[in-house]
Length: 441
Ligand SMILES: Cc1cc2nc3c(=O)[nH]c(=O)nc-3n(C[C@H](O)[C@H](O)[C@H](O)COP(=O)(O)OP(=O)(O)OC[C@H]3O[C@@H](n4cnc5c(N)ncnc54)[C@H](O)[C@@H]3O)c2cc1C
Image (cartoon, rainbow, N blue to C red; front, side, top):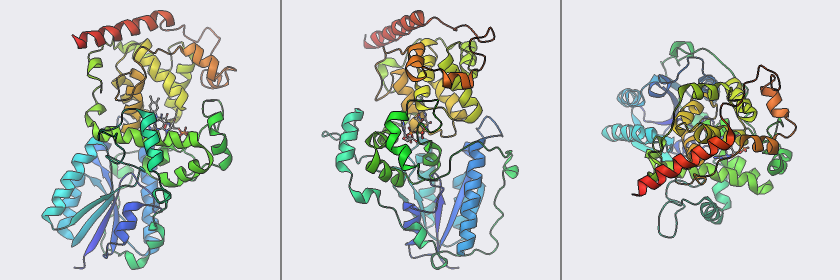
């Protein structure tokens, strides 16, 4: 049996500019790329009609047909990664398994298991940095700690950036029959139906760079939710790796420092989650771990369904429910309203967004929710409570956004505010202050 290298696609569903794939194709052994629909993740999804699963499925099938055309075989399985690899390592002479790094807590455990299996079979396990520019310990403070101040991190990040960090990897050029191998009797790939899912598509822009015009104007348009192209809308592609972050960074570096800074936030939150995996489910700030959240279920349902009587929040939640997307400025308003005005645990909001957002990414979601709740390693001051009304006047003065999603606004059918803003503001400040002070005693 001839030796092969396996390349495991995870959050990098593209052939081009792929660090791990390029390295695998230069490993000296023919490459068999593969994807695993992970039961541990899919079986926990609340709905069998999930646009993210359909998106992944379509991308895997695209990769499979590109591989067929190039003269190789693409493998796909529905199962537990450790079990899939145990079988592959038994059935084939595997020289190495290549992949790209994944910084989520579950991924660290999963990859450790697969690394151990590889070791038992004499195969190497190699994970490369691909989905961020700087990872893990590459940007640290002078004392060697993970930075907890975004401005300092961004400045160090920009100072460390060299042209080579943004250079594309030659994976497409290397993806030829000389570096691939057709496998006779490859198992049939799973279908959505065979995994118990219904096909369900939602709008996602093409996996291409945004126009230069959009990027040039980004800092002026990004906070105008009623504009169709107010921001890049590339978060889904960055999440699943259908677009290379290096490519988008190159464009941002050339045309708009504000967009570049937003992309640096993405690296920042990935770095923080890798250092502090417990923050996926626990507040980073120990003094804010016992906030007396009210967790009123009826109010939570009203928030989820866009029935709070605060039009900007309701419009955002309805857009999310209908499309799987919400503009950043509205995510801020909706999240702030949940954790401060309704005093509901940020983890409830984090979970709801996780179920609904097409671009859901644990590091970005947890990082931003903890920021809004004031509990994170980096966070807005806990005593800051935005007024949803003032936010609406500032970002949607002509009501174009709210009227699109809340057409009954101004009629008797629209609910009165679920809570009075000055009252809720004071209640939030008092509750958070009490928790903060109590934790110090
Ligand atoms: C409560 C809350 C939850 C969020 N959850 C997620 C999430 O699960 N997944 C996710 O990708 N983003 C999340 N964000 C960040 C941000 O809202 C989205 O990345 C952005 O709205 C996606 O739209 P875009 O691609 O047009 O962004 P653009 O404004 O065009 O920005 C370009 C890219 O920069 C990155 N970026 C922009 N803003 C942020 C930010 N605040 N934090 C980190 N990265 C950022 C994203 O990768 C984004 O695609 C969340 C923000 C908040 C306030």
